[in-house]
Each structure stands twice: as structure tokens, then as C-alpha cells.
Image (cartoon, rainbow, N blue to C red; front, side):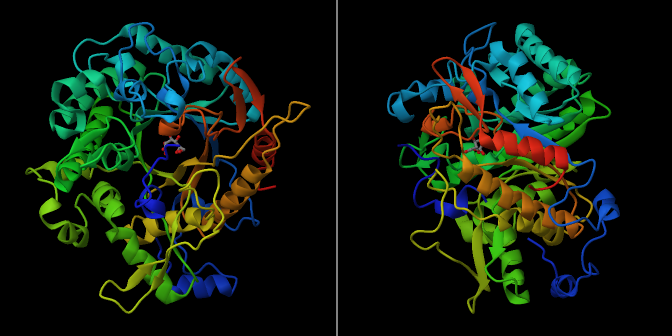
Amino acid sequence: MHTKQSEQLSHLTRRGFLGASSSTVAALAAGGLAGAPQTGSAAARVPLAAGSFPKDFWWGAATASYQVEGAASEDGRKPSVWDTFSHTPGRTANGDTGDIADDHYHRFKDDVKLMADLGIKHYRFSLAWPRIVPDGRGAVNEAGVDFYKRLVDELLAHGITPHATLLHWDSPQALEDRYGSWRSREIAQDFADYTTATVSRLGDRIKHWMTINEIMCFTYLGYGVGKVPQHAPGTVVQKRKDVLQTVHHALLAHGMCCQAIRAASKNAHVSTVVNYDAYVPVIETPENIAAAKIAFVEQEHNGTVLVPIMTGAYNPQTLAKLGADAPDVQPGDMAIIGQPLDALGFNVYTGAYVRAAPNARGYEVLPLPKGYPDMHMPWLHFMPEAIYWGVRLINDAFGKKDLPIYVSENGCAAEDELTKSGEVLDLGRVLYLRAYLRSASRAIAEGYPLMGYFLWSLMDNFEWSCGYTRRFGITYVDYKTQQRIPKQSYRWYQQVIRANRVL
Ligand code: GCO
């Protein structure tokens, strides 16, 4: 079984604020909200009953191109690095590939119907770069663009707002062959050009753009120091600095993408999606809350991805720790990376407990004990407070009290089975979602600007190196027949959306 991250990366790395001042905590304890930020529209909506959501909250679901589309070589699409990686023996469970996946390319109308029945008004999906610009640079494949026009028109016809991610890891193999993908700075310009080509063609239909999904995963987990990593392109590099350099190039691509979107579409809503680590004070005391705030900005993955996106600079403590492994930065890069955003997408599955400690850093991250409750993934520890703290720490650590945040992914894998009567009673997933949504509603009730939630995922799909062995959907997919069977969690989410509160 391939897992998404190696053991030593553990709970800290992949998924992964407030700082409510102690006064906030005290005010809340006293039943007041004096310390909470009175920001944007969220503030206008409080107080809300426990577990409730504001009227215009974005209820949504998410998928990604390589995980659902299939049609890998149709209508001019050329291979992505994930096609090559999954077709390399030993890289994915059972040698699974995204060749067919959920066959969404041909079944998108049925899938939009599934969304409409669910009641979501927002759908997050990604565009496959090698479908739109098959060689990574140069000629645009209009047949590939046409697929997204058909999909978006179908969404709009059902009253569903499209939210498009420009890259969810399936970068063109042609650029891997040309210059080693993220190892080269050239990729940032190619990504910006692909963005311009895409937004100028689809910007009449799509307003909400997300740049890149989870930079951490295809850099830190796509380039292995001295050993084959678990993600595409699966490159072995010699030094840690080589990995950090890929991170820097991805950040640059993000910044140039923001600029390209805004240049191509005047009313675009621009955000990005980061799976930053959420640090949860193990007990909500002022000391532990302060500790969470320090860990939040200086632990490596936040310090090298989230912090530069938010502030236009790497965290200095993180850089000092990296020493000679820190990436090379050219003049002007950081200003490009720190582009203003209209919102931030937070992919949250788990978190890490932290407490104050009498050491030089002032905190320690706690290891999870044996037997800690996990969902059906080695890294997916049940930690619902991660949503609340993830939202609150963005607000408090960066002082960006008006930056709207939405949960761009949240969900879990479960060992789903069909009952004799053909149902999937995924009650473990309902338990998980209910707890995480309560935590989300706490953030809103305290005035933090959480504006939406995209459940991962609308349906079971290709789970990267785990292939089809891990199911994250609220809809069961029978891969032999491509039948979609709504699970209990789908029925539950449908009612939650209807009631606008956790049930
Ligand atoms: C990610 C991706 C999704 C995954 C999901 C479950 O965060 O890795 O955005 O593609 O499938 O997170 O692992």
C-alpha cells in the first residue's frame, strides 16, 4: 500500500493560528465576543445559533481533473506527469492509473445532476493543463477548452457556481521532458502563459479562480532526496536545497498566475489552495495558544509555502533553520509571490497538537499516542479542532482580519461497503464531517471570516499513489459499471445544506 506521505513526514507535514488573544478566550468564556475580530460580512452575521451557518455560506464539493476525468488521450490531451508516474510499475497501488477514473469526461452531465440533487451551489474542480496546452507551452487545444465550456455551462444551467483550480498536480509531461518540471524556473512563465490562454477563453463563464492546489505535495512529496518519492514526477534529487528550489518555482508560478488571471479578466476572484498545517493548542490556555501561533508560522511547510504567499517573504526562522538548503531567490521574486488575494482556500483533513514548552522555540508539537483515532489513511488523524484553529490562526498570525477563508477541501476516506440492499452506511464519515463542521461553525460564530466549505469529495476517485483503494467520496463509484451510489454521508450533507446547520 502506498501512502501519500512517508512515515517520517507523519502528521505534521501533509495537512496541516489566533491567536485569539487571551482576552478573546476570556470574553467567549463569559459569553461575549469582545475579543473576536469584527470582520467583513461574517461579523455582521453573528451571533448564530450553535452549529448554524450564515445564509450566503458557500456549500460545495470538490474534485480534481486527473482524479475523475479519465479520457486520458481523447480530443488532443497529452500525458501529464501523473500519467507517466501511474503507468510506471510499482508507483501506485495495483498499478492503478487515471486512464478512465470516474469517466467524468463523458458522464459530467450525470455528475452535475448529482450535485444539483445534493443541493450544492458551488463546485470546485480543476483544469488539466495538458488538455488545454498539451505540450505545456505553445498551441492551445481548443477541443480541450471545449470540454470545460460544456462542463461549466452545465453547472451554470443548474445554478452552480464554478470554482476552477488551474493546477491540481497534473502538469504536462512535455515540460518534465524539456526541463524537469518544477526544477526549472521556466515553468513559472509557462504556467502563466497557460493561465492567460485559459482565463481569456473561460473567463466569460468562470469568475472564481484558484491558482495551484497544495504546492507542498508535488514539491516536497514529488522530489525525493536520495530516494524515489511517492508523488509525480517522482524525481530523485541529491540535496534538500533541490527540493526547496522546486517549492520556490511553484510559488513564483502561483504569483505569476495571479497576475495573469487579473490581466485576462477584470472581475476575477483570485485565491489559492494551501494544505497548511493547523496547530491546535492541546488545552486552550493563553500559553498554549501563543505556542500554536509560533509553530504556525515557523514550522517548515508553513514557513516555506503559506508564509511567503501571505506575506511576500519566507519566515526568517524557517530560513535560518534551512541554512544552506534555503532556495535561491532572484530580485523581485518575493513581490510576485506575495500577490494580494481575494480569499484563501484551506485544505484541512487533520492537524497537530501543540503546547507551550520551556525551550528556545517556546513550544513543542506533541506526538500522537498509539491508538489515536485515525480515518482510513495513515495520516488522517481525527482532529476536528483543526478547522477552527486553521481559520483563526490565519487571521491572527498575519493580521489579515478581512481576508476571507474557505475550506477548499475537507473529508475522509472510509472502508465503504455496499450492504445487501445496495446502501453505503458510511457512518464513520458522517461522524467525522459532523465534528469538523461544528468546528467550522465555531469559527464563524466567533466572527472569523470563514465563507465556504467544499467537501472532498463529491465522489470516490483516483487517490494518487493509493489508486482506487481509498474512497473519499460521499458518492460511491462502482468502477466496473461506473454507477454512482449516494452514500449515507451524501444524504446527511444534503439535509445539512437544506437546514443550513449541522444535523
Ligand atoms: C490533496 C488533494 C486531493 C486528495 C485528497 C485526499 O489534498 O491531496 O487536493 O487530491 O485526493 O486530499 O487525499
